[in-house]
Image 1 (cartoon, rainbow, N blue to C red):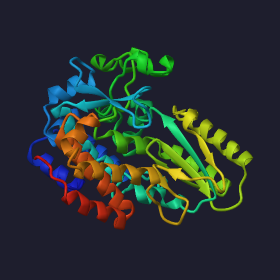
Image 2: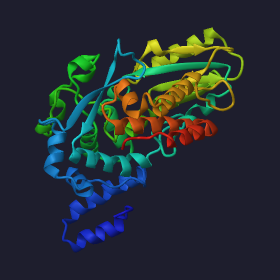
Image 3: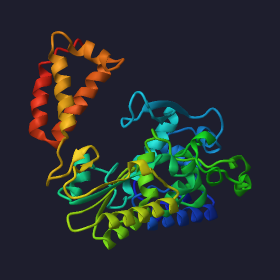
Image 4: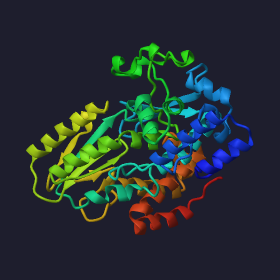
Length: 385
């Protein structure tokens, strides 16, 4: 059933001999969801979700109950902003095949049709990094802020709130939130009191009791869009602050930017920063103060790795030099793809090739003429595959 139709649902239920009271309860539930958002599918229960997503019900039940074994495979990836000598890592949690399937269904059928705030410039349809920084091009003042552990800061309570606002009933909203979140160890959480839960809260279903709230795992297909929807009101509040000060506000995942092409002052910048910090804390987010930066008039303005000093985003000199260096060594008879990949620490030549082509495609997206030149240069590289 593509679109909710109470008449069609009632007629089908009557033909199948469904109890009239059960049928009317289901119709009321469907009408509530449709009234909140007519584009999301109706879900009556966890079994209904299992049927619609094609995932075994008992498996979904075990995930909601937080039963072992954990349905995620985890590994660490070094953050690009950290050096090999002082490496910092992010934890990537990849769902099991069955969990991945239901999460993809939730992402594509539910979350993708729910609009994020207009200030959010990541994870939406047709979003790209060039468009994300464009509103800040030619700005005189630029303020950059960062949210620490963005995905992990979005709790299952916040995820539950998203599904409730989309029109789903409390129980299925809770179950959807559980399916989209993962419980982290205490060592990765900053405020134990915030994450620890009194189990008796869910005594209506004893098997659903758990002592700690989960949060969005980085690596799940639901996390990006769910995070955007969870902080929709936060984006609205920061937009209101920005408008009060005559600033433009955008958020690209955990990177916040506020700018103006008019007159401003460092004192006002600090005032704005403190107000944004306050909103972060109110929503359970933590500012990464080490990444907060103010770029005044005359200073180099770098946002999401792109220069925004002029009316169009541009590649940095460092990026251009690195790409030239890659192509030089790839074409060099003394180096070549294999030696160059090994020197950079790549274990897979295929992965290295994808990495290089990704850099060139990125360059082409930002500066087509420059990117085209290096697309042609790569054609002359003799890959041994």
